[in-house]
Image (cartoon, rainbow, N blue to C red; front, side, top):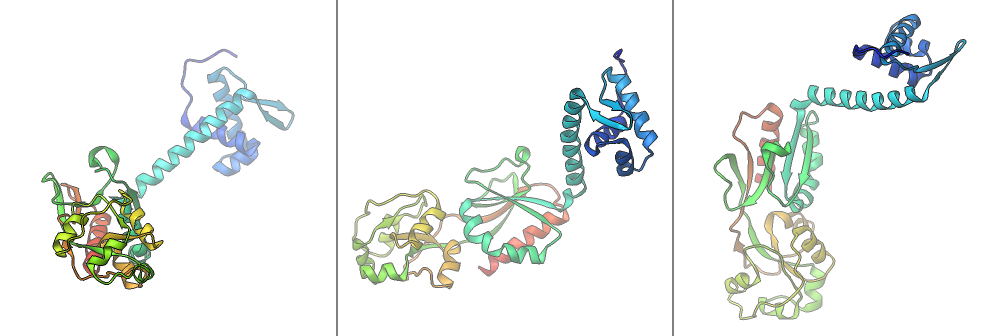
Length: 292
């Protein structure tokens, strides 16, 4: 065939992809709502423009050629991506992408996710759990729950909550090691994290002379709390992240001495007018933190 310099129409490409996938012109016509002859004409025009045979015709039977199959496969991928993009564009006002620390996602949001979905079934909430501070301009994130002293001034920010820091362990661990007074922690394994409020600060607040002890250091709060739940030691727990475990008696706070955290929780987003879905998410998060 002689190659034409004309570009094929998107309609002819769609008709060909349907014919190749459906295995015939009649089935493709039924899928697209056009006649069998209309499909045949579109395919013939496409073959003329491309200068290749896309089907081998043997009477009423059709077989896709190798070149035709390669084109059909590529078109199928392209059309799938196109329809996905169209669908996402049509529903973009209902999608909210929210960033937060993995520990906040696992320990605070996950137990409350069903409540959110019940309250807002129309919102497609997408969570990115990461320790790095997202760049709203380039990462496609709408808002974030940040744990920090104060957010930067270039963002709209609403403070959600403060919290306290105190030792936590299982009742079994406290009983096994006889932990009822801060001095008893000399017999315990102390688990260390990366909070500004560390064991040395807590011992000063408790007026306890125990020097800081070496022990496992786990940078992630989720890992630390899992170790505590597995009776591996005592950790300094953030009050909002351990509240559910305390309430269901999986963890205890063996002492009343607490430290006020220097960090707080903030809901932050770019300084632009939010859509209805983002406003709903922000309001729900604020209410849920207020109940914690």
